[in-house]
Length: 123
Image (cartoon, rainbow, N blue to C red; front, side):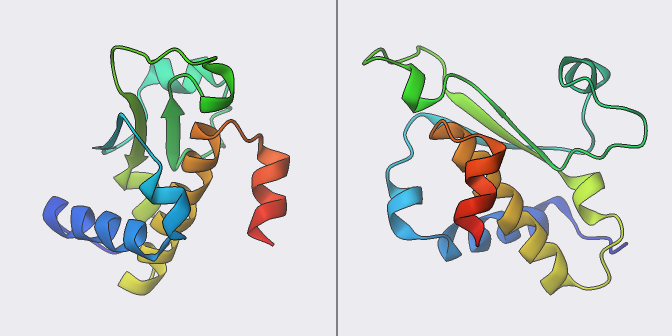
């Protein structure tokens, strides 16, 4: 596990976003990217996670594919969990790639993609 400051973690998020395909990032609207140290008990319960399961990121909102032209009043949220993302990482480049992968995954949910389709697109 590496230890980085919150500012460094935010810089990694910016770098990860900049490295994602432009069309996916530039079309995101009304989405807040947040950082928490760890998922809350409520978040873990909502997702029905077991104690041995790790959560790196979470998309909360109404996916674009389900909006039917309606815009929500509040922004959707993508939360990245600094603690789990940093665990088991040996160097900064590995953490950056884990953040990038997690952002891609959560952005996929923003667009309404399920896990199967997100993994297919990663290939």
